[in-house]
Amino acid sequence: MSKLEICLIIVLVGCFVFGLDDLFLDLTYWIRLSLRKWKLRQYIPFSGDQLDEIPQKRIALMIPCWQENKVIGEMLINTLRTITYNNFDVFVGVYPNDPETAVAIEAIQAVLPRVHKIVCPNPGPTSKADNLNAIFLGILDHELKTHASYQIFVMHDAEDVVHPLSFKLYNFLIPRKDMVQIPVFPLEVPHWNFTHWTYADEFAENHTKDLLTREMIGGLVPSAGVGTAFSRYAIDHIAEKLGNGNLFNIRTLTEDYGFSVMLHRHKLKAIFVHRCIPRIQRKRRWGFFGPMVPKKERERIATRALFPTCYSNAVRQKSRWILGISFQEWQETGWMGNAATRYTLLRDRKGPVGNFLCLAGYFYVAYFAYYHFERWLSLWNPLLPTLHETSLMLLLFYLNVFFMAERILQRMVAVNRIYGPVAAVLSVPRIIYGNIINAHAFFIALSTFVKSARSGHRPEWAKTTNAFPTFKQLTPYRRMLGDLLLESSAITSEQLSIALTKQASQHRKLGAILVEEGFITEHDLLPFLSRLFGMSVVNFKEIPLLFTADIERLALEKREWIAKKGLTLIQMHANLITLAATDQVDEALRVEAETILGGFQVNFALTTQNQLKTFIDRQAILNQPAAY
Image (cartoon, rainbow, N blue to C red; front, side):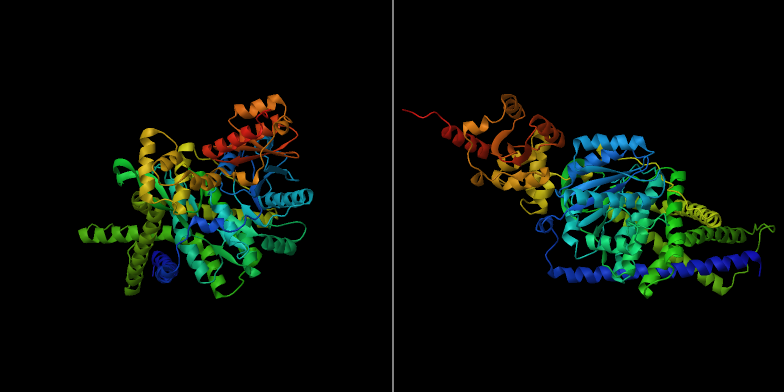
């Protein structure tokens, strides 16, 4: 038997074993999906109303940064403007030798007071774990100063698009669960950008099928490092185990994965959550053709982001993931837990080897096809090695072809589920390209691990350059008034379609059109505007009328500023002023109000034009001169 044939047998056997593994996971997923659909028939479908029934726990959002001055500002502004949650603060970790990022964070702090800058004690880049540990200590210090306690800790990166409902979902599930991971899906980019789309393909399959199946069989549910929330109990428990004020293991580059391994080891509850909400979006009537019309869709509560767009950056990032998960975590934790846990650990650690075998398999398939084509034409080159194919080799070959076809089908189904049919078809050639990237990353990770072991120095945080999506890329993921109304069944999708069609032609506010059409009353619309704008609703029954003497406690220039901004003073209590508005009050106006009305704490409340007019008329009657 020649050396070529021995290599081929090794490749065939390896691909066969890995193929059986993938087939088992795929079959388990589809069986689980069928049983789940059958069981869920008796339950009420998930809606956004369920998320609002739970009082809002205090959330700390942790964002580690190293040279993120180009994206952190936009990310923070987008998050705080779109998130439909009020009780949270943002803690951003920055290194002392990264002044550009520090300046960018300070500029946001001036406008958004709930953003807090945490300066790491060591110059960067150290590691993401070290940065997060500094943030954790900063949060503890903030708790001591404010006498407040955070019940939920959320992890995100500086380039993430945070889903507006994600915090409410964490709040809904914690503390019943100690870790909540939602899907992560790369944003859609032009299809010619193959490198970015390889991430989209892999995340679509992993986060709609693989992780759900791992959870079902009782295996390890890994944290993705973004879109992950932890309970206070889990945070305190792991911090106590590690000691020295550490929360994350600094000996690994994949601290998120390591944290989830520790949670699993200590039998804390982790869940990977897929929840969809109804949305109306404008799409082509016939898929790719026809006019733009409103269509009802189901949107996943997931984190979105732009991933590397060039080959070298992709290899750099994935080599860090492989180094941390397949080498460092193996070294740290070994093989722990029951059979299900070990099986999922094996899947995580065999991945790089599987990519290498896939590449070898591609060469074998190409050589096999060429060999038989030449023999069929009787043009065989005698200088090329001859294959002495046994029945076992042929059986393994055809079984592996079947496994490969099954893998391609599973990938296409997953990609179609998130990105549609065009992306699904293009995912087929991207499989080969993605395997080339992963195999290259594996060799770099292996080389880095060996060098690190010999030198005794831990690898540094080898970050990739990040970008934040443009306004156009973010548009499909912004929460709109129609989304909130549809989620709560306050209006029907047909009514929303009618209103959106009118809005497109008349360029008026959607709420006004809905009220005008009689689909909803102005009073019923108000709570949804309150949720959308993050403002409380005025309860005029609980607010006493103001006398002229009370109003004149404010200087004339301050009263003129209030009137100029279209606001109405409705309450003064000690050092608290409540201003009524009939539209959204942005962060810039809030900061300006606190500056102009210095000495007073300012609260903005939402009301309707009719309610406000009634209040003003009643106040005018109260303060009119007495007749003698």
